[in-house]
Image (cartoon, rainbow, N blue to C red):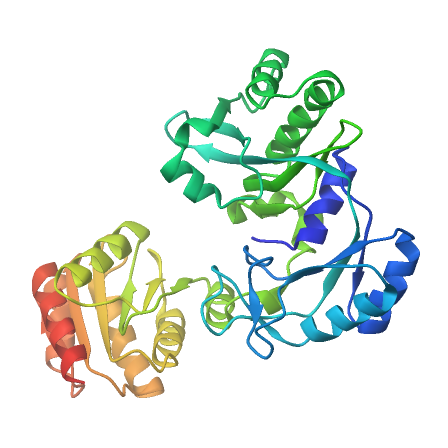
Length: 396
């Protein structure tokens, strides 16, 4: 689950991590009032959407307007907020259609001496969280990793013990922090690592992390993603969810107990199991096709879930063919065959449907499909299924 920057900063603040003062505004008038409330000579108006690259991003409706802008008066704050609110912001992470801006963060200006990078992820190689820092703050960290990887310094840490003092000293030295800044790092770095563990984050990122003129460390930006499998432990975090920022079909699938990820191709993929989903998408691409989605009905899908899965798949106008690829383990192939036929009658298919069944009661399941009056392309084996669905989508 993703949250907005202003929400991440509230969590930072509660964890003792320094952030600038800021006020959320949902109208130009609120933005002007926020500027006055902050009381400084400058402020920054920042679009709040679940995507990075806002500073370089531009509005669909006004390409000259970026998603982050420095302002010096209340009138400027109102003008920038007025341009952003209700408009669609395009960044490197949104796609060409952009994301609608519903709120902005008006934040106090900061005396910046240096810009650094900080990120935490769970590293499967180490089997534990890893803190990453770099002197190249404010830049695209993927570009830094590709072109100057020696400038990214890492420190794996034990979730129970947290980041150790010697690790803080080592990282501070690599970042060139001395005096007050090095001392500040001794508190700042363990605090963000503690927050990461205690709230079951999958990602925490601050870019830029700034060294102020006074030698303090401050999170000038904030990005947090949570592990959704652990949200049952964090009822207060669930309240931070902004469904308006999420894909409607992904929300709809989640409510039906399905896993769905929208992609950019034209072949709908209905499978059971994440591993089979990945294999299906791989072989579809191997044979020249492009998956339109990742839809996993899980190991115990019933008729209603399969019907809802087809509704979601067929609601995508880019979907030109559907591949049902089911391996019956706990789930019986006869169950999925009957569910496919029921879904066909209830939803109606307007694109070719390729079905590949394997596993428990496979012969009985294939017989059910073969003896039905539904126009289904039967496939035997993964390669056969991929070739047939790619051909069907191409011919559509």
